[in-house]
Image 1 (cartoon, rainbow, N blue to C red):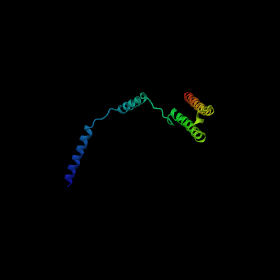
Image 2 (image 1 turned 45 degrees about the vertical axis):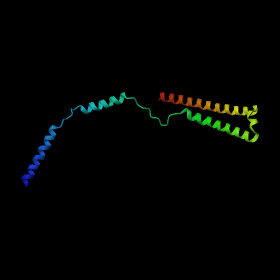
Image 3 (image 1 turned 180 degrees about the vertical axis):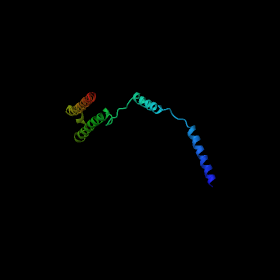
Image 4 (image 1 turned 45 degrees about the horizontal axis):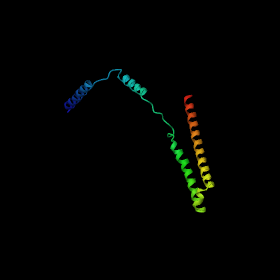
Length: 130
């Protein structure tokens, strides 16, 4: 049994040596060249800006403000119609109230747009000077 084990051991050892010698070995500076290539690719690719908050959407404000305006106008028309009839809807007094509500909501929308623009400018300026 000792001879058979010795033969197995020598055959295994021969196989290991054969595999070790047949492996291709990388040159000494191979890992340095790979790392240099990775760093070069990172430097050349455009970096994405990560934002802490989702992008600003103008239509969100616009929908909410003008949606509220139309809801108020609908409520005014419905209340006037059911209380006084359809004749009151064309009176200058009622049309003036409708116009006043419309102008008020438009002014509110313009103020929110101006404030948003000022905030974005302030944020950009702050990011540039850091």
